[in-house]
Length: 217
Image (cartoon, rainbow, N blue to C red):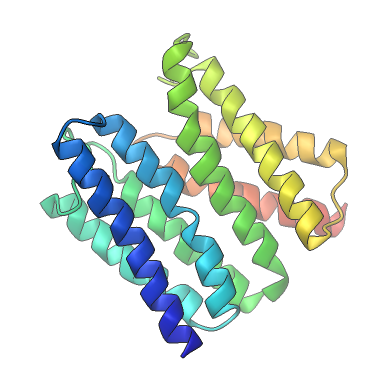
C-alpha cells in the first residue's frame, strides 16, 4: 500500500504542476521561460515523496524511468507545454529525469549514497532553477557561455544551502571548507554545459563529489 501511495502521490504532484503551469502559460499569466523554470524547481521536490515512500526499493528507479519516457515523448510531441521550449534545441527535460534515474540507481546499490542523491537533485532544481531569474536582472554574461555572473552566484549559494541542510539532517562529515569547495565546483558543472546537459553534470557531479569528499577526506 505504501509503494502504491508513493507512485500515486508522485504522479499527482508532478502532473498537477505541469497542468497548472500549462494553463497559466496558455493564459499568458506566466511567460514560457518562467513556466519551464518553475517546473524545474518544483518537480525536484518529488524526491521527498519518493524518499519517504520508496526508501531503497527498486521503485525508486522505476518511477523516474517512467518520467524519462514521458519527458522524451513530450519533447518529441510537445505534450507538456509548461516545460517545453518553443524553439527546441535542448533535451534538458529528458536529462533532468535521467539524473534521477542515474542517482537512484547508484543509491539502490550503495544505500549510503542516499543523502548525496538528494544533494544532487536539490542543487539542480534550486541552484540551476533559480539562477536564470536572478541572471536576467543582472545580465552580465560570462564569455560566450550565455550564462551570467549573477546566475553562477545563485548556483553557488543554493548548492551551499542544500549541502548545509543535508549535512545537518543526515549528520554528514562535511565542514565549512569542504562545503564551500563543493559549492564552488558546482559553478563550472553548470556553467560549461550545453543544450540542457547541466541537468546531468550538476546533480551527478555534485552528488558523487560530495560523496567522495565526505567519505575519503
